[in-house]
Picture 1 (spheres, rainbow, N blue to C red):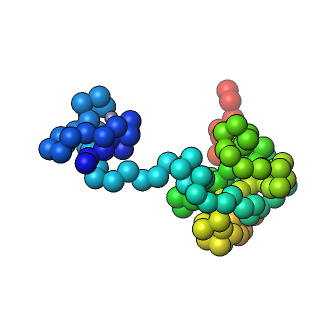
Picture 2 (spheres, protein in one colour):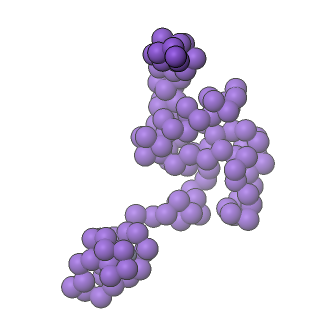
Length: 130
Ligand SMILES: [Zn+2]
């Protein structure tokens, strides 16, 4: 049966587009974050020094298609497991992504150190106001 990847409704055979959102239907739905979480363990892969680093790490993981959560954002109501074991500021990923995630993080932080800071770029790139 075809499904709408957007609203996740199931349609009868022969329907090609979702009448609600106009999105092309797919034969199989990719699992949602919640579904993957229900099946897999979340493991901590990084403990960021500050919010900036947390953002860099999360953005890099998401760019690679890896689900990433900050433990502080998780609540036990949202997810059926104990997040306390991760530590409050940990970045967690699904266990099956952990090895890949560590490599992505390592690379992202290496690049981050070589990049000029935002402040320096602004001084150079912004013409003085008149
Ligand atoms: Zn739809």
